[in-house]
Image 1: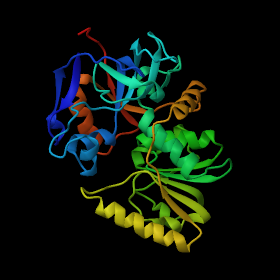
Image 2: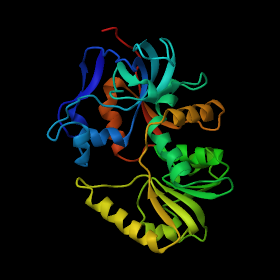
Image 3: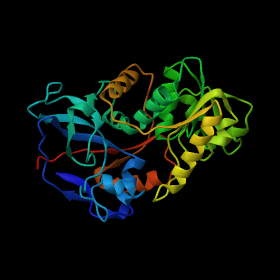
Image 4: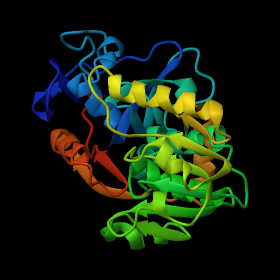
Length: 329
């Protein structure tokens, strides 16, 4: 089979499409014939080995122990391990795995869900990391309730486009912050208001919000407090970092200390794979309440170009990889 691999850390130039042996599922795994995958910042952090903490997760300080890449997958189950009870060969599934940028990959039964019939493989593959971040950020960290007002900073991105639609499904009033070219798109997916950040600084607005989901991290908690209600919650879901995480950790500590002395709260969200949340997203897509926004689609051999585009930071919604043809080898 063909798979995207990397044998050293670096730019997208370190990625190559190589022949590998088709994997065999363990007792609690299924073998998936990949139909689509999605690119995430998660992937290029592993590719570059930055921040350095991800090198421990990759199993190697100087080079990755596991050369595979890709975490969001959708495809057809080809074989199942002997302990699998929920799936069978031929089932269309989506979820999380290791090595999604390949013609075949294995995944744990606990990290998959059945793909709704009215959802494409590309749409399903775009869900896991981005939708987990949005859903868990709004529901679990932000405690978002019907009728509340929420602001999504970075509403046109991968996480943001899911967050706008998920917040609307919760019955919230949604404001999305985006660039000029994305204003109409953000409104079209359900935002009640769209703020063009090139024309207006949302932290200086007269509006007030119960929850802010920040997918960009270009404003401090102190700045965002100005537009939070007295018991509002700021949820950090993205932003710039450095190799030693000193900057983000310093900011987080400052915000934590500040939150001890004010009624508003600052929390961070780190998405966790969840079979239950996959099922929730499946129902939201099946009902039409959430429709994944896909910017561009690339072939398996074009994954380096997909990562380059994603790293540039201008993707509208998700960047997906379509695996058009699978070999039997």
